Length: 238
Image 1 (cartoon, helix red, strand yellow):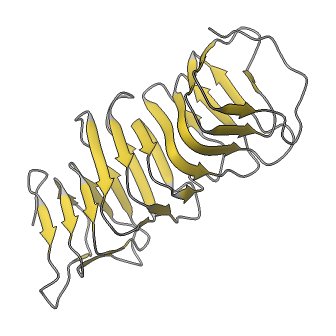
Image 2 (cartoon, helix red, strand yellow; image 1 turned 45 degrees about the vertical axis):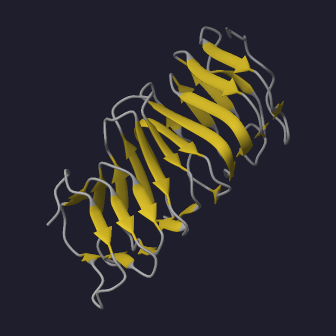
């Protein structure tokens, strides 16, 4: 069985392709070659913990499991020629400045909050279209969400920048679908706009008259009140 130090390559040649059927599956980097497959059990929610890069040139079947990227290195990548269909993708990298970048197409398929941002920044650099959250996310001080080319859609709920990072360099992020769905900042939450589009159903505002946040816009377009919102509160931005 591989350990966190082992690089795993799944070749197409064997007739019996591997499956994850027990708890405790770990590896360093993993490569699924063209014609090869990796399957997670479809009836038990196992977790595959990956400490290196993910390359999928074959087929990955996620079942109802979780793939956790947990290296404390500055960077991990998701790449390959095939679309990776994650059920739940978990980012647990320990600090906001450590990046997990999805440079290839991915999907997130769990019915409830398929993207788990515990620590580290998830960077989407492919043309994937995702619904990463099914309830209002609170992006904490050790976490970040960075769109660099995809389309992010959300339902009828608000986002909270609770000392966390929201960064948009390319692509589109749609926040909220109903009146009053907004982005709320507190504890110096940070929004960086470098390109692309950010559409907010309501407003971008503090949670109270004393909350602070940091907003930087170098490019792109922010559109607020696309559906409707409440009267603004005091603004404290730097």
